[in-house]
Length: 138
Length: 138
Length: 138
Image 1 (cartoon, each protein chain N blue to C red):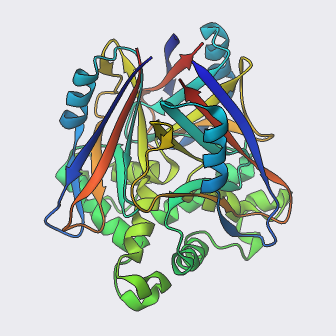
Image 2 (cartoon, each protein chain N blue to C red):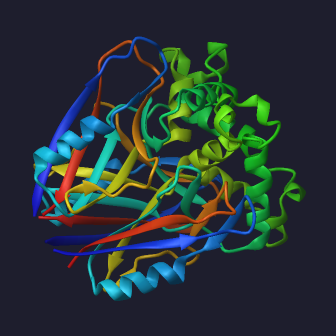
């Protein structure tokens, strides 16, 4: 069994951002030299997400509006967690979008459908945070 | 390490449908001859979902009503993504239900609890779409 | 390839509870003697969840309030599934929070970020239910 591990670091300019990390994760797969296996990509922080969807700015706007409707940032006083900060909404938004994706590796490539792209979803940014890429296989 | 890969194709009659694919995925496991490992089952399209829940028509009705409340299909004009189509709501609904499941394989069988069944959740159907089954183990 | 399997049992005092199971799952990893691999932790019941977030009581209160807003328990008559019981809301809440997590194992430890903790999320408790821990690697 071969194994590969890398941390990808991000520091987004806004509180909330979506970053297409597909090419960075594909570079990890190339480095791993793994041809068949599974690749786990997960946010290492609990106010961020890794998810797969479409790289289309209109859709990302829709995600932003929709997540704000489901779990509004403000007023901060609506959340008990905010006694410790102001990011309770980020924990909830990340729960909707998910912590991680698992992607199949086939013939040395990610086994994707036609529009699948991997995103880092930041919900409490403007500081350095990490994503873990772990690949197992042979 | 043994590996197995198969695509399952679907073409649902309605825009939204839930299809129990457990027996099809179990057939894949039988074909793989893998006794211990992990099975990844994921939608290869970003307006569809693979999830595990109960095979009960009343519950599926509840899912439909609930997802329409959380992320309504219409009016189409409420979503910026719909400049490219009319399926923004399908991207959001799939985010709630999830892209993939990972199922343990133990003694040649899926290591399920009493009511766990695998479903394909279609949110923008009436056309051919795929699910990936990837099994790794020995 | 090494493999490890264990069921963790829970019987929560309330209909809904969040239980930090990190130390129990870490004990499984120790028992497995696996140094590099992937660990799947999933609810074996479809009205419960395994998820990763913060161990902070204020946040857990926020989750409870938020999930009740997204998928209210009552009135029971709003859900068709409740012809069979009263737990339709638990199926919906679990869909938001997710069935499973996959955690990387590196150097014999869970490859966690600074605040990641594994929780069992119970949405229809007061009875015995299970979580599956499956670890594969070497």
